[in-house]
Length: 304
Image (tube, rainbow, N blue to C red; front, side):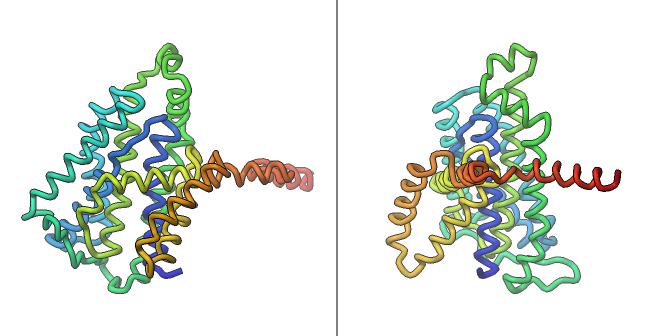
């Protein structure tokens, strides 16, 4: 696997995780996450080109800018539910797209921003392979943050809101605040992924802000499995490997990807990750947590 493809898979996986944080754990389907992904890319590209800051700072600026944008967006969007929430996020994303298209002096308009530098003191990051290894710790940090969020008490409350919001409210939880914070955290993770994408590929373009980009992230999440988190990474592997394999026939990319999506959704209704775990359980393989407990018990027994 080429470093450029590996980097794209990892950042798209992080992007899809940010979508799954809302969809899988809070029950909120967002079609506007391209706004955060694209803003993170543009913010990182702009500060990298204009200020020449190290790529780590540029990527974090992208994450911060997207998190800030998510505050007013989330303030309004999270007051709606279901399809209305999805439509509000889509409208906001299209608003950002048109603003970026008109603000040509800053964004480059339809041409985008090219030649985005990636620097770090003491390192030479001109080659894609070098940047892949340099950016890997930051990507893993994003994964760790997402994992920590969903396995924290905050994440458990989100699941309770997803399953039965009136009951969560009756128990005294300010559900709107929880959803707003989840929206902001999700936007920040999407911005981090977008910033690393722009730095890794050397450009930021309007395509990153288009609503179809949000649709691709949702597609990846569904393929891997909603509410599984790591399924987002598996979905990114499938979609981007297919896209790479069909580079010589781009007119077939959408058709093949759509066909694969239909087959997986019909055959694996819970997504590939959840289905894989279910198959392992049926085959008698204990889950990882159980294996760890067994190993610890054996160690204690051996010591005694």
